[in-house]
Image (tube, rainbow, N blue to C red; front, side, top):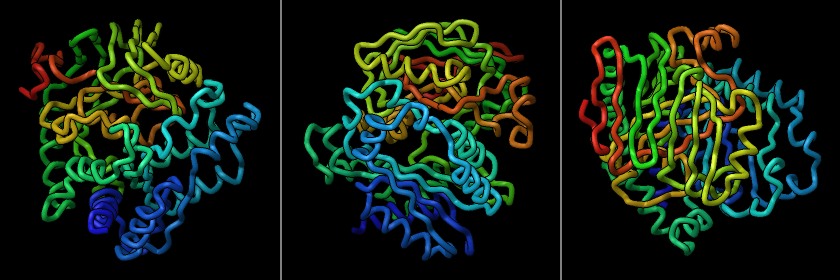
Length: 398
């Protein structure tokens, strides 16, 4: 229980940084009941006015995928959209607990149906959390997730790994995260000062050049909301990132970590880019899930994020493949196809969709991070000061 309580404290204090009188929504799986209870208790102890749990469940999702029509699976409900709008107006805090209780629950399902979701609801929630709400996403240990990693439901072993990655072993984990956030923010400031126009990733099977939007901002460690309150959208986080020009990506990538996508495991994924678009994908297994997601909307085939992570990452140092994007993306450099972050450009959150697209930001209902970093990865940036090394052989050198 001590670890669970420390986990909940980090989520509430370092993650969403709940303020007295604030409402909270908690999205979680039924497998996370004990952890969810601790998070709710910590939220109320921090002064939350109310906490609304929103439950998901793998088998129930499988029932919907097998039996509901594709039209139903993708149609948004008016009442759900209104609820999201009210959350944004009230400035609630959003917490999401991740960690598949059964990573194979959608094995054998129709890839198109497994990838289906109510587009307008998802876009509305993404706009809210990227523009008006403080939010955090955290991995919650459970037997199914442990089995995916270790081949047995050893939750104690998983808790040990998660505790290391989340700095729960520190005397004051929330303070430890504030210190790490300061280091990442300094890296972001150094990148901003270079005024880079492109970044290039080179590694085993990867040679990708991505153009950047003039004046874009790099982010590391956390964000600050419109009221000046700091928070950390992801815990753990070891990255600095920005949103690129969706029209400028050329080359190829080979994933160095497996991808769990819509409940399906993708191994050995290889992706080709030309003129800012994904033109071809192949994989050792699970490629159908990727192809189905890329058909979600026009923006799904363009990049919305480029990210830098080096071997100093605590997640990387565990040597574990977590089969969880939140953790694995913080073990190495990664990119993401799909939605951009409006805050990556000055004034972005206040812009309309057309203005963002004119700048080069990407609009999509999806955002999928894929890891391309690790041993041998080198990242360079090009700008008015020429080409500089940022990461050499997986070590930060800027």
